Amino acid sequence: MKINDIAKSLVSKGKGILAADESTGTMTKRLNAVNVESNEKNRLTFRHALFTSKDINKYISGIILFDETIRQKKNEETICEILNKQNIFPGIKVDKGAKKLAGSKETITEGLDGLRERMEEYFNLGAKFAKWRAVYKIGNELPSQNCIVANAHALARYAAIVQEADMVPIVEPEVLMDGDHNIHKCYDVTSNVLEETVNQLQIAGINFSGVVLKPNMILNGSGSGVKNESNQVAELTLKCIQNNLPPEVPGVAFLSGGQSEFEATKNLNQINKQNKSSFIFTFSYGRALQQSALKTWAKDLNDIETVQTVFDERSKMNSLASKGDWIEDL
Ligand code: 13P
Image 1 (cartoon, helix red, strand yellow):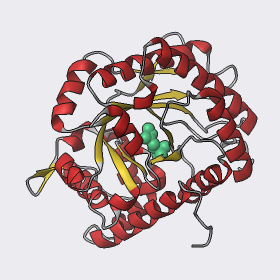
Image 2 (cartoon, protein in one colour; image 1 turned 90 degrees about the horizontal axis):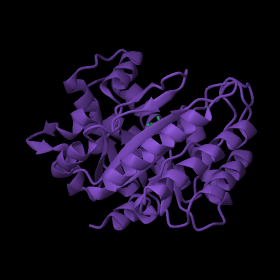
Image 3 (cartoon, protein in one colour; image 1 turned 60 degrees about the horizontal axis):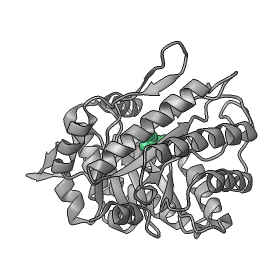
């Protein structure tokens, strides 16, 4: 399958992406928070439960995996084989995390060294798309232009290598919701970040039809004490993205970024209700798809069926939201 078709399928109507690519460190934090030991077997058991839920292929087009998971097997089948059987694209997180940007308090995402060779290996393991996350924090004078340009440049170099390897790059510039800023500040910073990211992708000669953008929604800072109104979130998010994204990009798949499961669904739904453009807006959620399922699992590690029911319910709500069809009290 050509990358333009994979990108289109990843954002096809009523479907979104499951981000299950937490690094071992992050997954350990998530498991420890619900008093479950983080070991290879437990990480696989939980993820395999999600990946084989009854209705997953109705709502999920692709799953982003971590390096450990793409190499794991369950009952002699690789995770990629298990996903392929259900027509779900396997993807892979390829960045090596946000590291200290020299001379600054900010971060630069690393992982370009040896990336071409790693992409070849991931391609052979079955990955069809990849993910790279850049992180920007809003604060006094932050993010700096240095942080915006350096991260955009790295995203563009990553995207070029991924397309060269015949895979779809998910380009994820995440402006964090941490901080006491208001929603308009988030709009301004996200606009600058997206503008520079698109500029660098253009300079690198990226085929925009074979890219999926994974941005943050436009929100009030989580420390601002201001409640987000979804009408306003939708209005500013749509404006920000429509002003900055080339029309060739087949779709946008938001990260949840610390929003509750409910908020992430509600805001996505409102974005789709207010969307008058031809852009497609769906989800690529980690926490907002997994939180309830993980808490449920922690109560009884043997009750996989209930975990799967909870996960299917969350996926269904986000699938409805991706069409603007979600109703609050369903
Ligand atoms: P969240 O939806 O939990 O923000 O995770 C998405 C993701 O892939 C972060 O890189």
